[in-house]
Length: 76
Length: 160
Image (cartoon, rainbow over all chains, first blue to last red):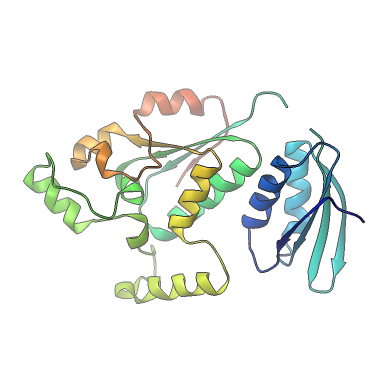
């Protein structure tokens, strides 16, 4: 999937991937897609929870070896 | 988005592990867009103390208490396995290995994300602490009524 912005959170643990996601999304326009790469497996449930709470869209999550790639679309 | 949800955390302890948990939660809440307020009371005031605190108006007992419990984020100890500082040192080393932010870094991050830092006036009076004795992140002092006013509308209220 194509992303407008990428955030590398490999090696970072909760809450850093989510905090970095929130900071990155703030600087993006509605409709844009953010790619987050993380290796803390907690992101698989943290990101949907964050998206649910903030109203952003969790598009997909793919396993890429030891890492997880998550795509989030900014809603508003 | 409508009104942000409120979250409050009472920080009563000055243990490093507890302070880390408190700031972890505060930062996560802030990343959700929640309105997070942290109330530092009793030993929790130690978390927000400056590294160097002046004697100022402190009475003898208060000054002594301050010397025994110097606090400040860099000097806090683990609630368990401190082992005269060795355990805390090992924990900090592990955190560095795993690229986990230190407590001072978590504090700056929280401020950056808009978390409110409030110091309890009663505890301040007891310990002879003044606003000047706290780090810059602390911009407000208040009492329990202020806390309850916010907490009564809070979605998440924690006592750490």
